[in-house]
Every structure is written in structure tokens, then in C-alpha cells.
Amino acid sequence: MIIRSHLVTLWALLFVSCGTTVAQSVAVFDFELIDTSLEGAIRGARPDEQARLVRLSDQLRQLLRDSGRFSLVDIAPIASEAQASNLQACGGCDMRLAQSIGAELAITGTVQKVSNLILNMNIYVRDTSSRATIAAMSADMRGNTDESWSRALHWLVHNRLLAPAYGLPR
Image (cartoon, rainbow, N blue to C red; front, side, top):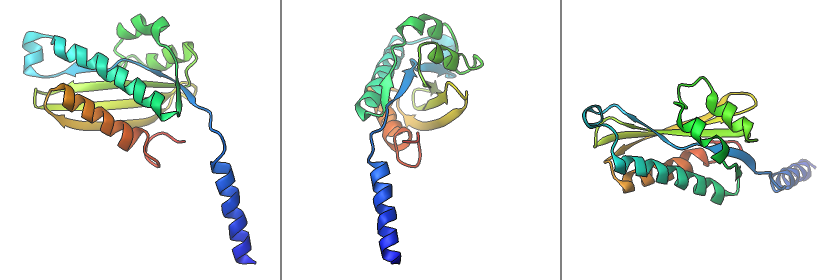
């Protein structure tokens, strides 16, 4: 009798967990560079790093699209306003902008450059309705190259953002 009730419970859980899921709508904003390096203070923005930020943002969008868990909302209507803002210090403008284009989630990211050897990548996921940060993740990387940036992003997405029981709820 007890075994039978456990089997019924397991079957019910399996049935519920195998149901179709609705992809969450998400606005993925472009990554921002926080350059605290001496080089950045002296020479300013580097074209190769600016190009990496664009590629990084596109890679994140593609990884989320490929996961099947998200429906990406086109940020073109609000892109210029987002680029003119410091999305990490604007008092929630990322959530307001994402909500204005119909997204349930706003995803922002930063790369902090301490030096050409020491960098840090961060991804933040905020709910546009509750205005809560529902996930934040960070990875240190060594080396200021296309490969190091790409590897850090892939690690964050696969081991944090999309990881079961760690990142976003399914």
C-alpha cells in the first residue's frame, strides 16, 4: 500500500514536470565595461574591448535563445536610451525599459577590467514586475582576449544562469 502511494506520487510529479513550459520573455541589454585599470584611465576606451562587448552580448542572446527557455524581446526600440544610461546605477531603468517593450525579465552584464590580466564578468537578472534581482553571478577571468571573454560567458551561462538549482527557476 505504501509503495503504491509512492509510485502514484512519483508518477504525478513526473507528469507535472514533463508538461510544456512557456518561455519567459527577456530583454538582454548590451554588456557594459567598467574600466578601473590604469591603462583605461590614461588611454581611454580600446576598440578591441568595445568589439568584445558587442560580441559578448550577441553570444549571450544566442545561448539563451538556444536554451529554449527564453523568448528574446528585441531591444532596438530602447537601445539608444539603454546605451546612454549606466544600467547598473540608474535606479532600475533596465527594468523599466525592459517592461516598456514587454519583457518579463531584464538581463544586464558588466565586464570589470582591473588590468589586462585581471578581469571580472557579471550577469544580473531582474524581474520587471516585482523589480527584484532574481539572479546574480560573477566569474573572474585571466587575460584580456576574445577567448577568455567568451569562455567566461559560456561558463557563467552553463554553470550558473541555466544550471539546475542555481540560476533561474525553470
